[in-house]
Image 1 (cartoon, one colour):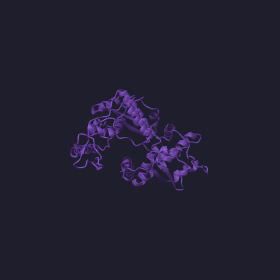
Image 2 (cartoon, one colour):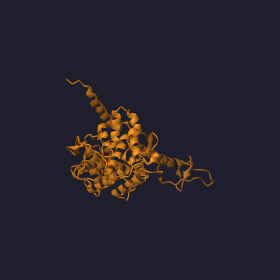
Image 3 (cartoon, helix red, strand yellow):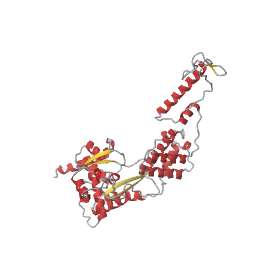
Image 4 (cartoon, one colour):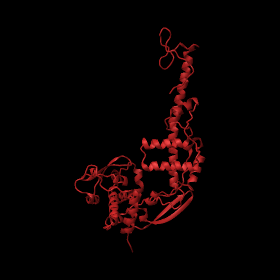
Length: 408
C-alpha cells in the first residue's frame, strides 16, 4: 500500500553520501528543489505511522482485519467506491463460500433462499440502508412472506411442520438474520462498505424448545423385528435406519460407507459434515445388519448399502413407524412472530433419517454410557451439544426408577 506525503526525498547527495536511512531522512539533511529539512519530512512520516497504528487498533477492537481500502479510508478519508451492487456482492459471497470455504449443500441452499428473500423485501437494497430498524422490518416481513412456501424436502423430512403457507417460523427468521450479519461482516472485511450498524442489532424472536424425536429401546426393537418380507424397499430402509440407530452415523456418512471402512470390531469413518475421522465400535446389532449385506469378498471402494435419497428414506420411515404402531401423540409448538400455533401429530409423522443418530445418543446415555464416551463415537467436540440429550436421558432414568415406588 502506498501513501503520498507530498515531499520528495533524496536518497543521497551529489557526493554519494546517504541522506535516507530506509525509514527516516538522516538528520541535518535537506531534500528536493525546495530544500525541505529532514525534521519536517520526518515529522510527517511519524504522524502517518501513528495514524496507521490507531487505525489498526480500531479494527483490532472490532476483531477484524482491515482491507487496503478500509485502512486507506480510515487514514485519508478517501473511500474507493465499489462499482458492484449489493446483490452482485452477495453472489461473490456465495461463490467464495462454495469454492473456497466448501459450504455444505444445505448452507448453499439457505444462502440462495436468503438472496431471493432479500430481493423480495427490497430489490434496490444497498449497504448504507442496513440499520437496526431495517433489520427489524426485514424480520417482520418474514412472518408473512417466504420464498416459494414449503419445499418438497420440508414436507417429507419431518423436521419442519409448517401449516401456514408463505410464512417463516421464528427460529428460521432468527437464522436468516444471523446469515445476513455474516454476509455484512464478510463484505465489511472485503472493504465493500463501512456500515457497522448491523452489529448493534440485538432483536431475536421467541422460539419454543424443540422436541428431540428419537425411538425408545422398545420402539427400536419393534422396528428392527418388524416382518417386512415381500417389501424389499421398506426392508432395506429399515436396515439402514437401524444401522444409524446402533452406530450413531449421520445419513450422509451411511450412504458413503464402504466395506473398506469396516474393520473386525469397529468402523472408521471420515465424516462428510466435519471431515473428522472417528472410530465407532461395532455391537451385535450392527454386526447382524452388516452380515445381511455382506457377500464375502468386496471390491475396493464398494458401498455397504444401496444409494437412496433421504426424501424417499423419510417417506418410507414414516410408513414403517405407522406399521409398528409408533403413534403416540407428540405436542408441537410453532411461533410465527407473536402468533403461537399448537398441534399434536403421531410420532411416526416426525421420523426422519436423523432420528437414527438421536436414537443412538439418547439410548446410550439412558443405559449409563458416559457422555465423553458417547462423544467419541458421535464425533461431538462440544459438550454443550450433548446437553439436550443428557436431559432426556435423565428423564428416562427417572421414569424407570418409578417402578420401584410403593403402590398402596
